Length: 616
Ligand code: M6R
Image: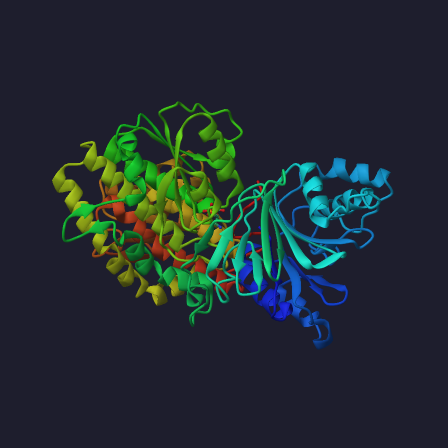
């Protein structure tokens, strides 16, 4: 949440900052601002989008080769011009951009007020700006000169909470001071120039050489130098990585929205996720990232999956897959609940953390808790080099490519693909699956991208169905077994981008309450592909029909029984029922996309949301 970008070097900073903020806008988009260093420090900021910020800049404003920018997702204080970042300290000695939350900000604020400080904004960030300045000014008469970076370091020692931040001091305007604890920061290394950003997307246009800051790192950067230390001022060795991210991967590529592009990218994302791991010819499956922990996985007594949002839904599919293929008891937990509810974690437990961004604050905290209790923690993440893969001992990357639309689509199917492969590999190794079952699943998984292509060809038909639900106030999604998590995911997709209230339920639970909601205005989306509970779901459809609900059913190709009952059916190709989530979720993603577009909603940046939830 919140995007940060900063630059020092030989190019005009304003161009890099504005372009960078546009790339980071998916992290927060309620206000934006930049500070440009020329002879003075000039700050421009406003409520609204980066394009609004751009419109208040004039040619005279945009000079300077040093600067920083921020796009905000409000935590403390409403989205207003004043609360937008950057924030200046009271006497103008320091300027700061910040992602995260300073938890003890009220206490610090009272202390500063007692020292004569006043505040313009409601933010925790301004408190930090003033704290740094206060520390700096307290040492102004020291015999040994006291540097701006030392003021930052000492102030940060007083801070509780999370931060990824960049500071510029009026006294050292050619220098960026960056620090990280809990909120991601990456430094791009160019020739006589450096970039800092919340993720690599603003940087890749200029360099693929990067350093991911670790918690507690402080980087002091000028055009020609980078000095990495920690909070105790101990020098740290920079770990320079080469990133493999192409510019076209983060552009819309002719699609109207990132979300639509990402829906269409799913066949490729699944192929990329299976590449080098699944061999159709050799009927083999190898997950290199789990090699060192595979024996422990095979003999695990219990598996715990922790995640949030869509990743949690993928985790629920994972629970069903792991229990079915491996017979290892598996539980899936919301990371936010797990971390605060004193869960039982046994020494031999294996914990799998799932996250697209690899930065979700609750998931990271749950990982820490599981680690401290002695569990082996593995990661399933999409963003290479993000915090979760670095916090976990082993894991499997999804290779979905950058997901920019706030509504997660291709990350979900890539996560389910990884969890399917994990369950298959463990199941075959611990004899939960026979050779025949294992090989059949390999064949089935191999065919999934092709089957998704076929579903995507029906997008026009799904768009027509969206016309029927675009004016609804509520929608119900029903599924059983593997399709229950898909029902939850379908409902989440609809509510987050179209703002229609939607609920996902196990179909049989309908009779225990939600059936009371059904009338002729209630669209009921039923996931009803052929599996062992098909007859049961057919009965559920009858029950909805008897109450005049509008039935939209996702069925297996050629199904005539449900076609005769439902108002609309969307056909998907036949597959093993354990793999059906990978197919049935596609029409639901399209349905929510088209519904949101028809309602005039901002699909890629829905209100109040941010892509990467780096605050709890
Ligand atoms: O990056 P993560 O997978 O950890 O994110 C978890 C959720 O915030 C995320 O899936 C969220 O629910 C999406 N907006 C859903 O589309």
